[in-house]
Length: 156
Image (cartoon, rainbow, N blue to C red; front, top):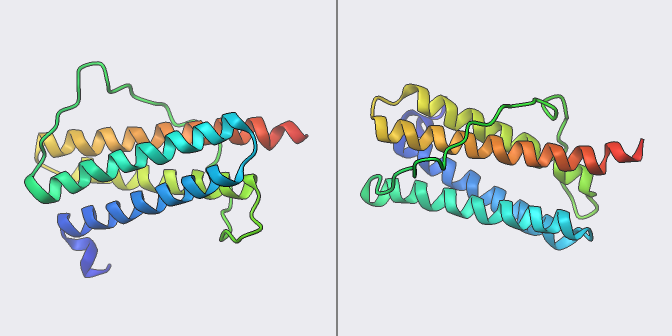
């Protein structure tokens, strides 16, 4: 295990990089798709990833300074529809199916990281943050899986 992953700060910094990468992926994909609904979904996901990044940066700069608003947190069930998909590296010729596959896998990995972090922290506020972020990533995964079903499975 990398030394970087042995501290909370290192894990948070790596999570910030992941949020930046996801934001870039969604913005790039939104610029390439023609379907207005897919474009809107990808742009919304990109915006949410920036929000996650800001929350994580807040932890590093001044500690946790926000609370989850009552009723904002809605637990999402993981349908695991995209868990069997194999993500290939994206290139200039990648189609929407390839982008969705990579995005689904990224959201799955982000969810697992945040869920693990929620499970190992002793601080209730930090636990709530990671649980909230894990749920957000699962929400993104579910949106992407729905789009995958609508777009890819529609071809069959």
